Amino acid sequence: MSVALLWVISPSCEVTNGIAFLEPVRDGNRNLDSSRFASRGRNIICNSRLHMGRQQRWFSGYLNADLGYSCLGGSRVINRRKVSVISNVVASPAGEMAMTSEQKVYDVVLKQAALVNRQLRSRENWEVKPDIALPGNLGLLSEAYDRCGEVCAEYAKTFYLGTMLMTPERRRAIWAIYVWCRRTDELVDGPNASHITPTALDRWEARLEDVFRGRPFDMLDAALADTVSKFPVDIQPFRDMIEGMRLDLKKSRYKNFDELYLYCYYVAGTVGLMSVPVMGIAPESKAPVERVYNAALALGIANQLTNILRDVGEDARRGRVYLPQDELAQAGLSDDDIFAGKVTDKWRHFMKKQIKRARKFFDEAEEGVTELSSASRWPVWASLLLYRQILDEIEANDYNNFTKRAYVSKPKKILALPVAYAKSVVPPRTSPSSMVKA
Image (cartoon, rainbow, N blue to C red):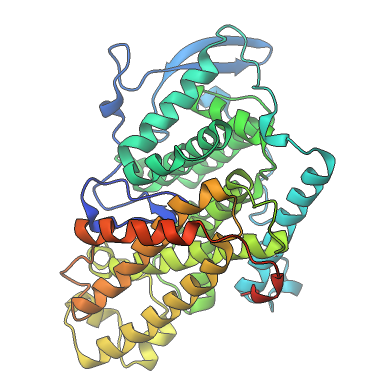
């Protein structure tokens, strides 16, 4: 089951993942391999800082955040009250259960947009705030960002090139967010996923809170800590992504689209909320900030739905069905039909409806790309257009997503790039009325 990460491109040198506004970081057996980034004779050794009360010492840790949680350390974890998932909105009390998932998530969007508006009113150049100080090694922060860039270049080649059009501050910040999201995803889909427990995810969340307090645990955390100190990035979407990982540990069926939508938000839409403050909104944009955020959220949902439709066969072989159970039943289908892997007229009819829904989310997402800062538009448009083509490829395969993997060919990728560039030079609309809420 692939998890899509917003604003990032396919990590694999093969083009089966296409390119995505959200990058699919979990792709079957394609996981981030720490051994590929050897440094000083060890696997991606990171000069890291371990906080032990008032004492600090530097040690070496691994890039893979799930390697027995050696990077976390047993004594590192502090017992604390578990934080509710989406503050008081998604993790709502019984009296609020009547709200749909879309309504709950949109409330989170409003909160994130309000944060950005407050930050913009309080300081004009928040993105160029001085780097955080890391005692003991003044060059560590620069090295941390360089390491994040290496990971992005290895696993998200096309997007990495696109980030070169951004300002250095925005570019480095996107790299740091990408690496944190990838490490988080590998907790439940990496080589040691079978050993990951809810407690381990609680520890990872505690570590995240330390990052937002300016207490990074290792050099990769240091890059993220510096990023969130410069940009109006809120911790809630990061917490929510961890909640998506918790769902993958305990849930393999979704009874309706409302449930599935919330899952898609957790594992993909969250990255849009993380990234919009870094990507930046064009100064001439007249669109309300929350609508730009909502468009980014829509793109996350669209890409995750595309991943789900592309990976039906792969997920079925793992005993997972990421399709609305009630809609399967309405189409006269069941899990047994999916496990059998036969393309029938019923399946084609069902898939047409699912693809139509994903395309509607892509349509909504397009409304927000034009509102981004000019340096961010080209890679985002390229990602959106190419990832959307995966749906076309599913159709071209006669809806056989059981044994055939839909992918965008290299020639099609090349042809899409000038189209994306042409769209990227279109300035923001002068009227916000055309952007609508989901």
